[in-house]
Length: 472
Length: 97
Image (cartoon, rainbow over all chains, first blue to last red; front, side, top):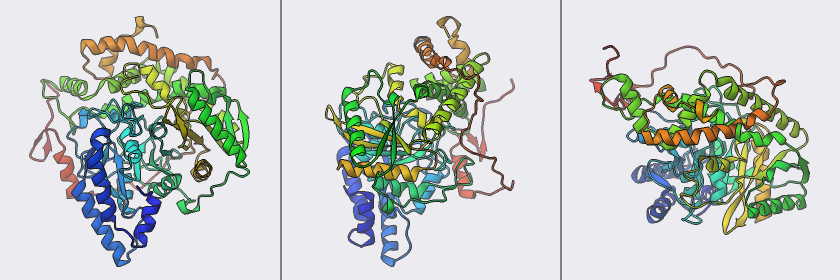
């Protein structure tokens, strides 16, 4: 499949139509998704109708958006008016969104064609997409393996070549980690760079929407279409400097790249370590200055995350009681109705985290866990601010291991949580991070992660694009 | 937290969750080990740190408090999502006995 940038050029030159691109995408999904399970629902007729409309506008010479005519997929937690939006949960199995999320609104304005919604861990809680109520998604590189998670369906849809761009959400690594495991590019923008309005909230201080694609330039193109201030999300940020995909610099000459000592932990896959070290060597040979860093607080990112995230999620998921939408439990008494709707509607991992969050926030434990986590988060942020005085970006693996077998870690929550060891610190500090493929270990993809200071997403994309160019 | 002071039923009540016996048993096993893991945080001295909920330079955002009508179409979409209704009114179980 072509990249989105190539599709865009071909569309603008009149060499291909959006209808042809969408037909090709749908054909591939119907032929191959049965063995992958990336999509929960596909919108054939609607996508084709939207494609024909874009084709007519292009033919008339009308002004069209940056993603005009390009087939894309969205994660099942982004409200899409008139369409089911289930967040991978039984709780929302019949829920039809009453409004468009800002993401969907901006995709439509940019002319993108949404071909379907993709599978995810229930309420985005998981690192393997196995907690979805609907189905398991398989890694397109090796279907005996997990795709990572929680945006496993969106990432698999790109890795399988069904769509050039998909949109996921990243609360602790849910875009970058599956992108690493499936061998594609995944970008978590700066916190607030993309509006969260209409994204089913998991942990509001950490959640961020971002693109997944096969190239860094496609991620840049997608980001242009969705970023920027939105009146509906008070935490959204003004983007004063756009960074057009065509203008990525592709150079690391003079760039200072920090390598934390903590990037290589005991117990990580040796193959991952080797590939990441080779990538760092390649960056050095291309003119980057490699700076060794010691960031001892980095290892506390994951424990901070597993306090803040369940705490916020337990509050956010308080709204699901089956009263105004979702699945009502028809039992006697309103209290029993709440308890039953939630007990039946939520799956095991979601209950585990609601319980953990409720415990952490309960009287007597709030200061010891929640406030402590906020303090450590502040300390980690300060140490990173200091590091960024000396380096432009930090580099490290995205995941300590390659894709594992389906079911392998499913019954061991801590082993599953450790899959996010390199990614959560970017969320807790609001930093942008990107995962780019850096080779294979045991025939499975390895991801290289770059993290930059807040709002330096443009520079991050430049450096990632430069690495991509070195590798190929 | 030790297993002794972890009262699954009490937390389940706070969390408003019905849990089966099997689920309670699994949580009694899993949660203490997760809490033991996150307790690693207590190794960090934060006595000189002021804890912040938000690290980014966010400031309060104000806008005029005016009602915006989202349209009949959206209103009906919300009503259609009601799990139970009488006409266009949301029907809920009684609160008073």
